[in-house]
Length: 466
Image (cartoon, rainbow, N blue to C red; front, side, top):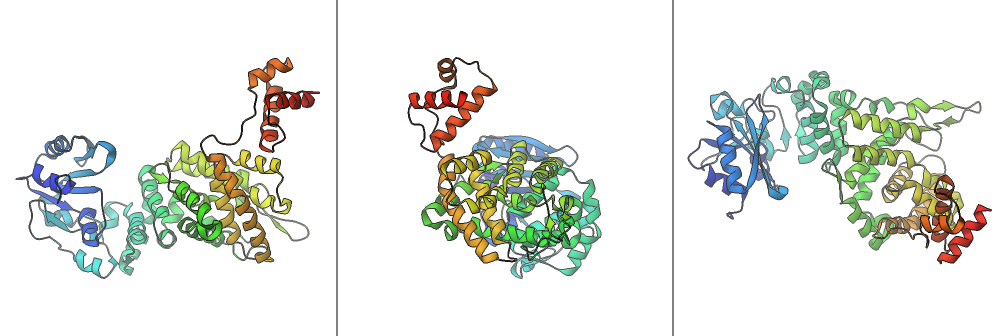
């Protein structure tokens, strides 16, 4: 190994210490997965060991838990980190016996030697099986109910029946787990390759009802004849289409636009999530207000008027409850609020430049993201006249994705050729709401190519001023 390898550095720094590589670090090495996290179980002074490793790595060490004596070492730039914990129970066998799943209950002596695997974790990895170390696993920490779903969908492991049943027995205790810990697991489930499988396991164990009760509440909420699924199944179908679009945007938008979309979705957004994972949260929550807004007209037509606006409020409330960042809350709320806009414009094709401008301005800063969400939503809606509606919707989305990407590009949309203060002086008006209205009109006129020069902009504004 390279001298810069974190495991090699830990071995050299902690040489002579009774320390073990444990948990996910060993599991991922056995699976051939790259990991930037080290988990170390250490006898003796954990704080001293953590500080020594931090000095050697030119990083920082800080305590994670006063109750359990765990420390974390983080290197500059975040290339890797190491969590050091006291050896539990006085021996490595006792320590491993207190872990959650057999695949995480394998240890390697840091100084070298044979692995310790008292619960058959290597065998379970080989057989792609996920099972608890003991029936006490979920009693020790109810969050392990969510970790069961997370490991299953991240690592493509199948839980055995006894483990699922034990998790189900403890799902109600999740209500007492800190929101930050719950969200840390939920966002990894939503981001996982098999996010739908992870959510299905959360539902099966009852965990979904505890951590995100608004989602299972969508089950059984029937929709109009334009839908073939109830709101819950439709939501999962939208998530499925969102994931497919994320993996291959070129299938909808072509190679050039698809590459630009993929690049945008890969951008970091907030809470260690990319825009792609934030879009998945948008898919999960886009119809979250439908149970509260469902109505049936005298003619028997099912409606959900206002579910976009109310849904945006509920999405924000849900993410606030989970202690998500303000940036993620605002982003997902905007996706929910605007997810119907593109569909409303289908009958106006080809869009006049001013209508295109109005769509992009209203949806910013999620103009690209919400266009993608609308595509996934439309593809998951296959009731009456579905193919005709899908074809028209996709055609409009393809027309708008280029302008939406350009709106986000450096420089953004074209700006009016006159500043606000200049316009106020030229028109002899004071700054205020009326000036703001005139500048907004000039933005639209400039985008539409109706105004190109400063003189034209002032003349246009003067005409509007009357």
